[in-house]
Length: 289
Ligand code: NDP
Image (tube, rainbow, N blue to C red; front, side):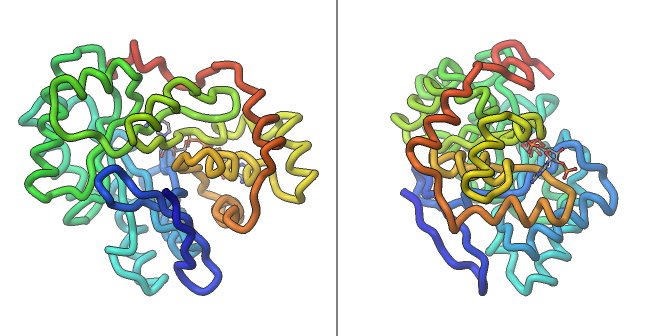
């Protein structure tokens, strides 16, 4: 279920409700490939001041320190509280295994300068199924101890999720995977819907490649929006949580300005038809760090 809320003056934000009853903004800022300097700090700060309430970080991005400073400054400048934000980070493969999870978590908290995360994800399934189970048990311990608000996974295929279902007790709230008009992930999306696991898209703009697609540009012209707004809105229409990355102030603003229009069923179908099952990132069945 989805709720659109006015979060401050003119800012609109839609929230999704997880299988545990908690909520998450349906749009956030991604910070992959952003340097650990003022670029990261300023992008995060500008996003928060522009109405973003969700930031997608990860230990392996190497910029949690300056992302954290952007969060602190954004809170002050926007006049909001930490609780108004939804901060995600991800456990990297060198901290897999039941007892290592807490070390990975505390490391990210310290770098970010936070005392809890809203969402912690296993970044990749890896190729060792028993290690996935042990690692998820470590995530469950964090959650059961009240250290983290929500736990989820990233880059999990159906078989990885079936492994967790068979051997562990807490269901992930979310699965963050590559998703854009050339990789529409129909079977995984259907599976996640049937399991009440929220889908979240990474590289929603296909790292900017999709923005010159003819169909995307044509729809953008038809409705008087930018190609990025069309693609981000298409994520929203599919009920997918999305985290486009930008360090450019006017693009950060453009990318959140998508809650006051919609796409027609025909436009959605035209975008869906662009699918080529084409990845720009690694294959989750093979990637091991
Ligand atoms: P995106 O698909 O979000 O594309 C980002 C690129 O698009 C940047 O070059 C950016 O440029 C450009 N861009 C952004 N907005 C616009 C716009 N309105 N008009 C024109 N160009 C635009 O790529 P990412 O790979 O960064 O994916 C997004 C996020 O997903 C990551 O930052 C990360 O948080 C997450 N992710 C997670 C992964 C995982 O394994 N879980 C893997 C990969 C990503 P500029 O910044 O210069 O403005």
